[in-house]
Image 1 (cartoon, protein in one colour):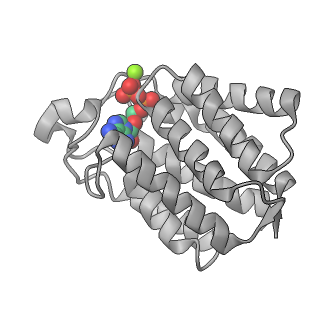
Image 2 (tube, rainbow, N blue to C red; image 1 turned 90 degrees about the vertical axis):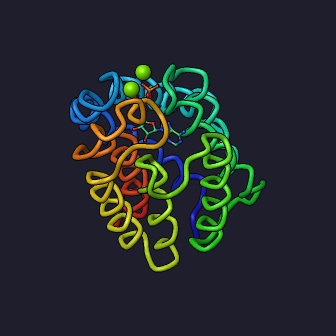
Amino acid sequence: MLDADFFRRWMTATAASVDREAERLTALDSPIGDADHGSNLQRGFTAVTAALEKETPSTPGAILILAGRQLISTVGGASGPLYGTLLRRTGKALGDAAEVDRAQLAEALRAGVDAVMTLGGAAPGDKTMIDALVPGVDALGVSFGAARDAAEQGALATTPLQARKGRASYLGERSIGHQDPGATSSALLVAGLVEAAGE
Ligand code: ADP
Ligand code: MG
Ligand code: MG
């Protein structure tokens, strides 16, 4: 079972990998964006870890709701409200359970990803974070490792796509040939589950 400590480890592991990869995320956001994705998420996840230390929420749902709220209030870019919605909606779906299993987490994350699609209007294939999140959540029924691999593949598979949502879509065909920064950070978020599980 996955308890509050698992969810805290998930957030801190993601914050650490965002720190490590911030320059790469910003570099990916340079040719097809405004070169701020790494710094946006670094600011956001630094606020997440600080808030989790200060407020010590005690359930999985409360942890994700607090984390989502921090991302919405500290990340200026498009990705803040989108990731914030993902975590808040996922947390809401977990309710006030003290522990959840992987299948319940997968179901809750699916509700979160659906909320991101509703908010941002992106569908799979539009070259956004959705292209890593959907395969990641789909594979979560198998294992955390399978989810990480599927999300990474999904992020890599955005390279030949033309962007249809977000800033990169302004470039039209010139967005082809570049990996999407948001799909890349979503793969880090999914990979954080493996670290939290200690696998
Ligand atoms: P901004 O574009 O405002 O500078 P970021 O650089 O932080 O924001 O995030 C850009 C990423 O956000 C993109 O790479 C893409 O994955 C994601 N994104 C942008 N718009 C949408 C959308 N409508 N739906 C889903 N994801 C989106
Ligand atoms: Mg940007
Ligand atoms: Mg920006």
